[in-house]
Length: 229
Image 1 (cartoon, rainbow, N blue to C red):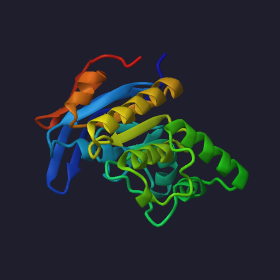
Image 2: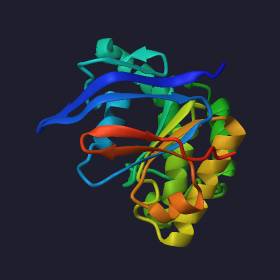
Image 3: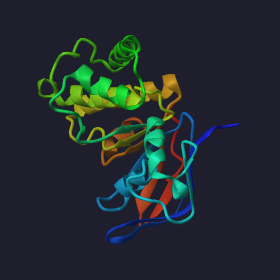
């Protein structure tokens, strides 16, 4: 039986401008790779924000990584986010710290204390994403592709069951975007990590076809697509 990571049943999603998406219903299972597509303003980012409690869920049922999002307490938000890897288009890195300091900050903020364990985990993840040897560099010394690899490394630090990626190739040239996609697909396959990736890059979807959630006319249309295996 497949392990379900995220379940939405009849959820209406609101932002300050009002109702953005209605009757949102879907499941994301362990190891699935799913694209989230739709026009600008169609609700993609709002949907993602409900998953890490930046936008509240007030209707229907939403279970994310075992947490009931309608009844989530503020004190539970850090616990929820430890079970998620969040990859932002504009990186959200700490520009006044080195590569390793950015990663150490995440671990210490999520309860890691032993320096040896922290260093070991940083080495494992930077090796996996291809930024090993960059630990002493400041963020401004990295290329755009290296910064996105670091963001993915940060998202992987606590071995989350799901990565939520908002336009992870949006600011990258086609060659670098392809490298990032190859990395995400490898993480999906090797770790059985579910990945939900919002994107406007239809060339990426054509090259690496997978299941699609389409934000269209205020609803989520689930398109079967192809399993990335």
